Amino acid sequence: MISDDDLYRLAIFLGSCAMMMIVLYHFLDVNSSDESADSVSNPKSSATTTSAEVSTSGNGN
Image (tube, rainbow, N blue to C red; front, top):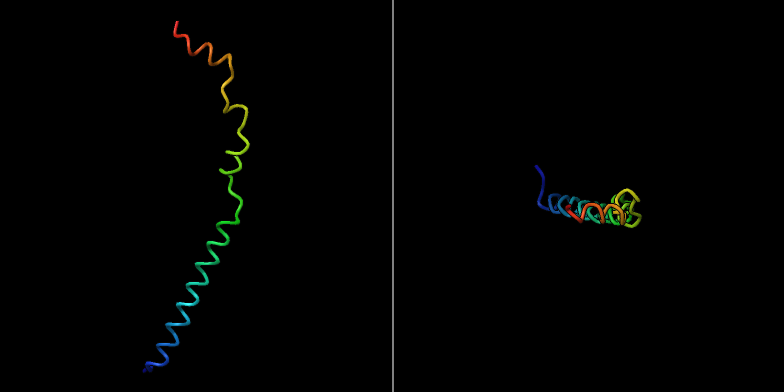
């Protein structure tokens, strides 16, 4: 059977591993390149509205 000291050491070890994995996950998440962030900073010309489109759609006649 497992002793109290062995259980304590196992809990400390597993808890430490879990915390290190959480920190590693957040480090990788913050430093990853995101496609949506790139598209927001560099919008495509098809996403912008031209003045001709605004003048024809805004009249309603």
